[in-house]
Length: 596
Image 1 (cartoon, rainbow, N blue to C red):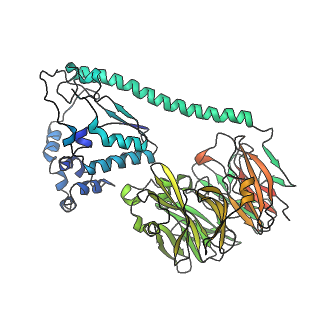
Image 2 (image 1 turned 120 degrees about the vertical axis):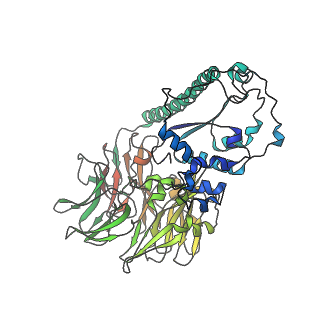
Image 3 (image 1 turned 90 degrees about the vertical axis):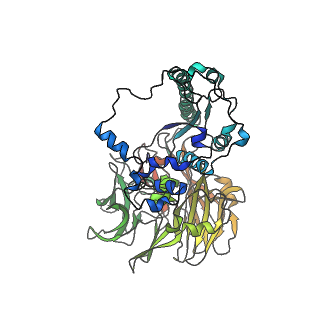
């Protein structure tokens, strides 16, 4: 409910053993939740405490049973106060409380611990800095009662600020008005102490961020080269339209932007992209669409259907869709009730849930819809790989995430947060690969899967599976981890045979995006310490590796806004299109090559 309105930067959670950890009557707290039971995620919490609540809440009056008298009283005689925030009681405890029971008799509440861990995971997922605090308890000698909390903090790397048995407070009766609650004097003293500690933790985090950025800049100053772009082996580079007021790019590396003498690309606007066609002969540029559903890696997934029709993803009536535009008629000729990730001819479309991707792989998601609520996200039976039959105009769930989870392989953390990405259809349309990506405890894990519309298999299941391409109807290649070693590998999707590309891995041992043409494969790289991105060509027959070009990538663009080269061959193999920042602005360029 909080995340529906805003995303907090920092949460300081003061843990109370009886409320947050120990076995007790959870039902007595349901009164405050029942009025919100229709909000996403709340009903599951209520039902987990008492399964009978699902039947009681059929009555809309039931949720107000415990509070209607208070509501009536508040409306007749509203309580008002000029106080802002917490005000401590001006009383001092005048008795000596009995010693608390030994920790051996303590029983922990598994349901409370489950939701406490879920809360930690949600904070990690939403990049919220979480700190746990233990307020002083009079005469407390140890924090054994917090053992499950300490384990969770160690597991997830969450700071725990302990003043529970801090003798500066716990031995001073003048700070308490009972053994659990501090009075005004104690609250002021403790708040001052806690505030200084929070300030130090926050400042340290900010300082570490600044140090990291300064270190990157210092390394760049030492390593930087005297040029922003350099081509080798007779290559020539040309900008599609030169530097303009707006940034423009094509997108992903698996589809060429050029067809029949025209180039397709995205031009950035304010929170939207324009879909542009440029005639390479006349130089004419024409806008054929506008989309709010885009990201920097794939744009709006604009791609050619044939020489006349272009497809791109959009957001309309609260849903992600695909639009087909006829270039000759300058009109939308078809709307597909789901977005496109890949398409085979004009037979079928495959896609993933882009809303789900916001929670696992946000660089490839769209931002027109909020993140899924937890109940919807965990509904793995009704989401996964979606298929649209173009001829029959039918949409169906082809492969659910639940089915994918049953294909075990090396599935490390089934309880993680799961999504599907990078769907790529084989050249003959008889199978496709995709990445099963999941996160657990803030760390990402991948599995490369293959489905032939009958059988699902896990091809590669080491944690790092990055970018792949089809070489033919049976074989793929890409950058991945196999048997604990990361590099470039070829994999046969039928036999499962894996072969390391030793020469390519030795010359270019880093991650990138591969695109094939005949016996040649072109791969790019992420920026090195000098902030240069390299473009290599690898010959599968001769094992030759050639450096084609280097492009500068600045420090300003990073993570979500980074600009990968995403190389794509033209249909004749004589040129490679790339997206690049070397000029200071994102632009689409054409690198003419001679690889014969």
